[in-house]
Image 1 (cartoon, rainbow, N blue to C red):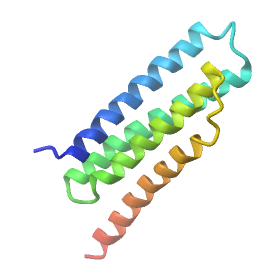
Image 2: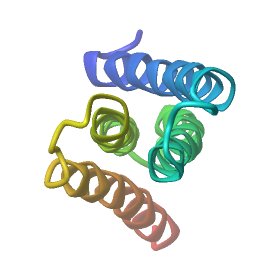
Image 3: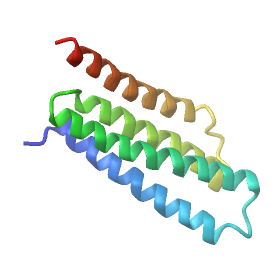
Length: 126
């Protein structure tokens, strides 16, 4: 049975992947002629981080299902990617000043990776 953290992480990971592909493609095809290089770079960075961390969150869920880590790791990765990517998309597409929000997402992604690392070290020590 899927607990709430597992399910939330799975939903956020899927949403991250969906946004990464959708907004990345929109920028590459629909905004190429009108967006600045800076805006396109922000969107590319956001899409890249979102996609990588969506996949990482799915991997963390797989590890959690096998007892190597907790779904918290996956949730931190997926939520971090959502916040980080969302902040960069908002800056690029809506000219919103959310520069201080992006580091919160980055910190969440770091927490997710650290959680996996700690899980692996603890599991290896048993």
